[in-house]
Length: 114
Image (cartoon, rainbow, N blue to C red; front, top):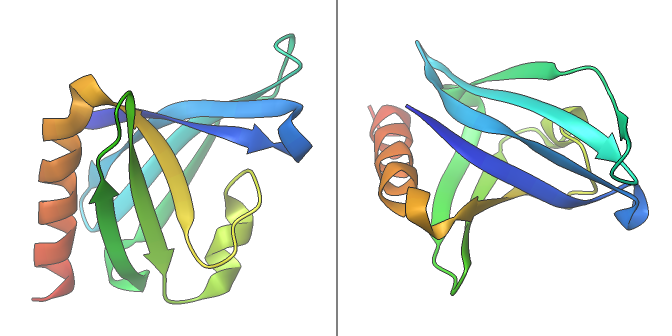
C-alpha cells in the first residue's frame, strides 16, 4: 500500500516534492521527485527509515488535504527529506487517501509498540 504525498514548500517555495510513502519489511519507504519552478525535475529518490527509528507518526484531517506527521528519534533523519523540517516531517495527503493513511499510521504505531 503506497500513499501519494506532496511537500509543497521546498527551496523556499520555488520547488515541490511529490511521491509515495509505504511500508516495506521494517522500513517506512519514501519515493519522491522534486520539481523546481514546475519545469526542472530532479532525479527520483528513495529513502528508507527503519520504523524503530521513529518516535511517532500521526494523522491530521483537513478540508481538502490531510497531513501525515512523521517524527524521528534522531533529527538527522529530517535532513534526508526535501524541505525545511524543525522536529517532524509534514506530508500532505489528498483526502481520498485518508483511509489508507490511517491504516499506515495504525500499522506503524503497532510496530513501534511491540
